[in-house]
Length: 165
Image (cartoon, rainbow, N blue to C red):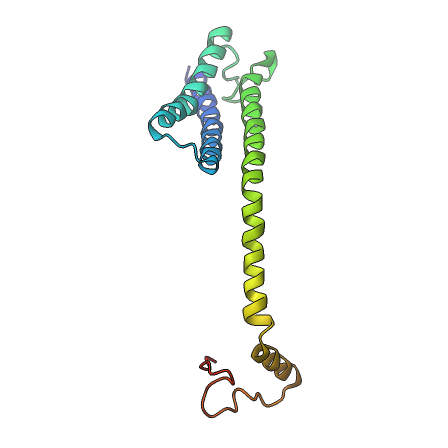
């Protein structure tokens, strides 16, 4: 009896963890699309996160009359009789739906990510690489020469900016 109950709880909590990951994916999709209604969504998330695993475990225990929930060797679903598919099937379905939602979210965010990355590249190019002072200092570092900027007694660059280093 203890092994049967342990197996039932393991079955339930493993499925619940998969279902809660699905709710997170669903929430990410709704956040990206801007369709967030907290009260209704919270009830749906609770039903999906706890209700669906409970339903799967209840149905599988009801059909098998708890046979296959635990074996003399281990407290897990029996490999004989196909009861393991009561876990593998829903888990695989959740993973598949998560992949589809992930692709949809990725497609919604890919243009933002590309332009955001390009913005960083442009800022580095304009404010660092293409500045004459940076190029001169870099050339001087490569040649181990006297840096005209550090030799400046006033501590400012030729364009009037204060010297930081």
